[in-house]
Structures are given as C-alpha cells and as structure tokens.
Image (tube, rainbow, N blue to C red; front, side, top):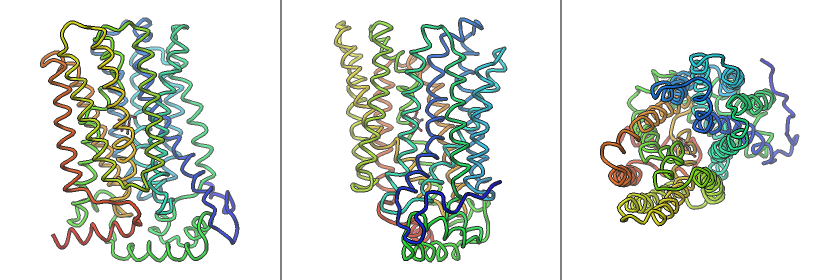
Length: 463
Ligand code: BGC
C-alpha cells in the first residue's frame, strides 16, 4: 500500500494549517455519504423493484434488512481489524466494497443476487460507521474535534437527502438500477481520496511509528503543538496494557466505556429515528395526504435533517455534548407527544396531516441537532486508543442491531397497539435515554482524547 506523501496539504515547518484536517475529515466523511445514500435509497427503489420482480412481503423486508445484517457484520469485524491494520487501510477496503456492491446491486439479474449485493453494501456501511468517526477523531485537534467528527453525520444526512432526490428523478423512468448503481461515484472518490491521506497519528504512535505520527501532525499543528500532542499520546499509551482488539474489551477498566458506548449506540436507535427516516411516506400517507404531497414532505424532512446537523456542527464544541443531547431529547419527547396526540384528533384529517408533519419535522430537527451527530462524535472519544476500533466496532454493531429490531418491529407494533401508543412509547424511551446520559455518560468537550481516557480509567479503578 502506498505511503501518503508527507507533503500532502502540509505547510512545511510552520505547521498549524487547519485546512489539512478539514480535508481529512471531508474525504473520510464520504463514508457517511455512502452510509446515508445506501440506507436511504431503498425505500423509493423498492416500488420499482417490485414491478420487475414481483416481491412478496418477506422478500421486500429482506431486501431492506439484508443491508442492516451486513452492517452488523461489517461493524463487528472492521473495528478490531483496524486496531491491527490501521483505520485508513480498512476504510480503503470498505471503499472497494462500496463500489463493487453498488455495481452489483445496480446490475442484479435476480432478486437473490440483489440481496447478496445489498448485504455486501451493508459490510461497507458497517465498516464506515465503525471507522470513519475514529479516523476523523484521532486526526482532529481537540478544540474542533466535535465539529470535524460531526461532518460524518452531515454526510449521512446529505446521503439520505440525495437518495430521496435521486429516487424522485428516476421515479419517472421507472428505474431502480440507476439510483442503486450511482453510489459507485462517491465510492471511487472515497477510495482515491483516502489513498492520498495518511494514517491517524494516534494509531501510528500505538504501533511505535512515532516519526510518521510527527510528520502527519505537523501538517496541521505548530511544532510545539506536535511535541505536546505526541507526549500526551505516548503517556497514555504506556498505561495501556499490551493487548489489542476484542480481548482488550474484557479488561475491567474498559468495561465502563463499553457501557457508555453500547448504551449510547442502542439508545440512538431505540428513540425511533428510523421509523421516520425509513417510513416517513407511510406515516404521512396514513394521515390522509396524497402520494405526491407525502413524497414532498419526505424531502422536507430530509432537508431539515441536513440543516439542523449544520447547526450542531456550529455549536457542538461550544455548548458541550451532554447539554446538547439533553436538549435534543427534550425536543424529541415534545414532538413524539404531538405526533401520538395527532392520531387522537377526531375526524379532521386535514389537521391530523399537518400536525403530524410539524411533529415529524420537529422530531427530526431535535435528533439532527443532538443524538444524530453526537453518537458518532462521542464513540471514538470514550474508548482507549488500542481498543478504539474494537470498542467503536462493538458499539456500531449494537447500533445496527437495534436499528434492525426497530425497523422490523415498527409496522407490526403499529398494527397491534395503534400509532399513538407506539409514538408515546418512543417518548418514554427518550426519557430513559436522557436519564442514562445525565447519570452515566461523561462530558468530553474541550478535553483531549488522552485526558478522557485517563479519567475513565480512574473511574473504573476508584469506583
Ligand atoms: C443514525 C442512522 C439514521 C441517521 C439519520 C444516524 O446517526 O445512526 O440510523 O438513519 O442518523 O440522519
């Protein structure tokens, strides 16, 4: 594998060029664009796949969930692999998987071939979710780490919106192959971009490649900052036991971090975001709106999702992670009460549609400014460098597992208990998530990854 050029984006001796870390974060965030696009594209494409292949409910569900199953495997395997082989190397492999998956799914001659390639795309999506946040976080200076890591979520939301729009464009051509196949383009850009970017300084130090780490840091830090950061990374390194990968996760001092990581990851799905992202048209249609209006509303939801993620990027390093999470969850509780309540309004279907739509927008806005980006910002922050890949991998795997459960359970639960119970139930889960964050999750804003690690380690030994 080619070593990245040591001058790429660098500023020579002077260092301190922040542009380089933005380039790093933006290229890596393309993994998020593919995550969002590949998960978002299928709901619209399904209508036309149905015309070509005559699906039954089982096959339809399987086309959607094969990607989620692949993502669980991808997240689980890639994290630990990246602790051994490097974040960049595995992201490059993921980019190849994304590319082959896109072409294979777009050309699939039978439904089972399509399912196999959707599973393959899932491997890429899972790997991206486990690795890109660590790659960005480990490359970022502390004071802008939150904003940079949030670029991953911004890319996810842009990917979802792009998928909604491209589905809209190709809907008239009755084609599903183009929307699936076009994901090849960002996959190629991701591969080429990552090829020229370096490994993260933290991973390099963990492999005793300090000189390379120094070179990478000097692209975006002054020489004084480089030495300070190397010193901090090394100090924490020496405290870590000499194990890597999943074994490390069972060490007693890593356990509190697993509780925080897996807890955040599972709650991010149990609050129900993908009932809206995957089923928005179904929910809106069920209030009596026409097809076209419900497709337009879905695009509106996609736009709100992107815009509020931008707001999060602007404020996350100033207001702190926990306050933002708690405010977002409060907004979600209010909107879920509104949506659940709307279905109790008697007969006036016009009003129900609008109240539901406003509730859904408020709900997505509250998620997008908080839990959406913050899960991916915080996961790499709370794991020690040697177990970071395995830790974020295990957490991402739990995130995809919970995503799968919610996606499968939503429609049957609505049929059994009714819409109001389901949305109010999601509100109760948001309250539980708030309690978990308030009492269990540490604040990570403004602290170096090394500081956070030392604190979590102390917490584990003292209490
Ligand atoms: C979640 C996805 C969700 C997306 C919505 C991500 O952070 O992990 O499951 O579809 O946000 O924007």
